[in-house]
Length: 589
Image (cartoon, rainbow, N blue to C red):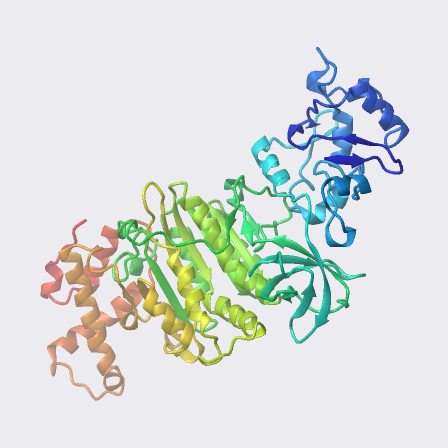
């Protein structure tokens, strides 16, 4: 790769793959002569440089010619010192068969000119990623060469560039990319005087492509450059645990973040159904109701169906803290901006963040980012699952994911035939959910909890109806229960776990059936009982239900600090009525 010194016509060779960036910065470049570099830098970029200064601290003894370049240089590079130009010489372009300057972005060297390269990189990879030594020098943290190599490899040497030819309602047409772009590719749109924004390819034609910009159209002009970035990918890393990121993999918590070694597509392929394992053992959840009446097992996918303000986010946070899992991935899709920090600090807390990765896209962001948030969270969960770990995925909410897809599909010309939702909504939801579940071979499992916003508690609306058919259970939160002060406001009679009866023993299933019968009996006669029309002794089953109901209702709101066996013992105590048969039923583990 050729790099030019600023303000000079001479160029010198920098071999891309022999540059080792570590604690001392640039470690070794075999093809360069240090004295020659020093002379050039003194004349061009660093007047104070000398050959002695080019020896890194660890290599000061036993320095050999053509081996090392610069601690001081690398430190200055790390803080953004410009050592190269962002444009290639014309002869270098012709050598690479790049014949049109306006159609390609020019090569840039990764290690130099960070201020110029930064917008095309993960912006938090190096910025603020340095620490002061005892001598007051800035050094790079020990992050491993594999991560830095992944950052370097992520930079494409050239990009195709098109031009905006038409701006319409919600989309724009771009010429020059029709033969090279693919459906779903990302693009970068440059608007003079405005920040660079991204977009996604929606429709393809021979000469033009349709782009949906990420954000407003303000500042866009005919002839604006549109750079093709390639397919949507994400490169998760183990160091993301305890972090808050956006759907593009950039840090939202102000700390540096590194991309993983291997990138994976956002829209991954579900595991072959014939190779999947069956549902695993029952999980401790920290909540009595999920330990007993609605058991959650490893690899299960359940839905939380509720209206706004009923407590589903609080319930998700309790599951994040209480469910036994190696890693927790949380997707906050379309949340209110103020609630993201509140959820992380107050609801989830320090204990919950120790094993969590939070992916957030707020409600004011574009539908592209809100839809991508669900895919990014699933890709991060798959990254840890492929390592053999058990992952708990919490998505809040799938309804906002579907609404974001609706905006994109309608902009692409798809009709809204299903109560305003396009036909492709069902496929997008099922494809996302099917990527969770039990793994295969040596892979781990993804236990998923998807929250669903239901307007007016309408369980027949399209998103809720689709999810009920694809998930392994559904939990309904009722507003009336929440209004009388019981949280979580679970309506047990409308909720079900498809892990039963296999997730419980025969004795435990007997207790679960008895509890449901008592609650069902009371629910059918509740109005008559509260109106004073029922006389005690008229119906033995109803008498038992009336006596058990306050204890069962309180049981549904209880946390469980012990284990599942303790939860079943408390459930048996709630069903005990004057020596009744249920009192003699003992749960087994």
